Length: 138
Image 1 (cartoon, rainbow, N blue to C red):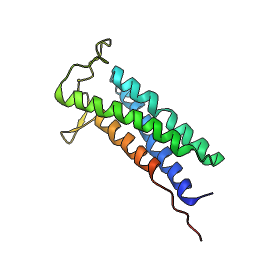
Image 2: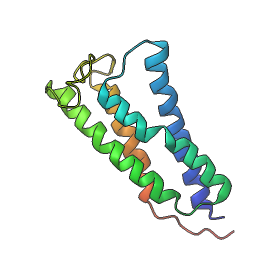
Image 3: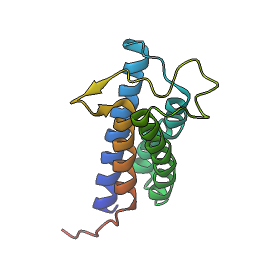
Image 4: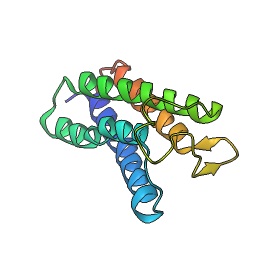
């Protein structure tokens, strides 16, 4: 097994696992209702830890493709969500939900919101997925 592949799968599973637990913490423990865009982002985030664990165990070389596609689509949703939240723009995605996508439920350091955390997570996973592994010989 390529050592770079091994570390990539572990790193992606840790990042995505923390993000999944964080999203569940916000919605289930803190009772912050997710908006429609949050649900779309969860659709693309939740399979990533499972895919990365399975890829680690089976040495699936298509792992980068799977996580790259999922994280790229999630990144687009997170970027759009961050944009409309920062500009208080009404979105077509959130018009059918009772929860507004522009509501800021949580803010850290004056600029880090839940959609921004999602953006950073998806960006990290995407960049790790597209990085070429190096072949190490020991």
